Length: 215
Length: 63
Image 1 (spheres, helix red, strand yellow):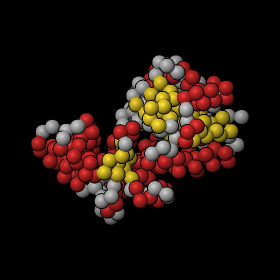
Image 2 (cartoon, chains in turn purple, cyan):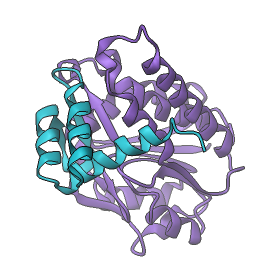
Image 3 (tube, helix red, strand yellow):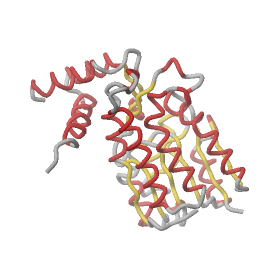
Image 4 (cartoon, chains in turn blue, purple):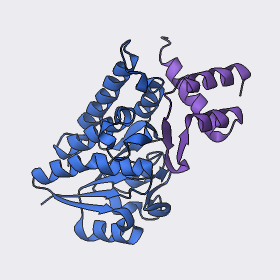
């Protein structure tokens, strides 16, 4: 059975939002019969993640967390779980959707050089506006939804066996839908000024590797 | 940062909704006022927000 790994450190506002948004993704994957392993909160440690990847060989990995040009973090930003030229070789033959800042800039490229099938992520910082009063129900926070929904669309498309290229395109279409929404004359005042971040995030999401790859 | 650009960026940030926070990865989450202070002091975050705004504005300019 094909396996999926999802990390959800959920240790600050942004990662708690991703934790909430990923629940339907996990439900979708389970409904399709996939073996889904979620590491959450303090479980998102380098040793645990490395060990799972090496022993269980998930084909699709969705990283939610913080990142830098050459790394992805786990629970707390100092816990580096994947680092370029250190353990990026363990991503060999896998499709990676990295919902973290900047990790496509260097880590994605070195991972693909070492055999990672495809790496989709941001090549610069991911800027996510949100309204903290929605912390207990982030799915109702339209500010965050404008930027997070396109990422969830990408994960969903991968789980539904679309190619990396098609999944990326649908994510970009979703970003464009929200851009158009923010540009409308009747857009709600809650989204004033938010389009600049949608545009930034849309134009800094990148595919590295095999665009025709499928989960 | 050019003064005109700084004034433009601050004016546009001031237009963001009240109560908004913006997560900037591992740099944490900043309020609108904190973002404006970063622009005023020309910190790396302030420079980046100017870059974001310029990229967005340029997207409306046809070649």
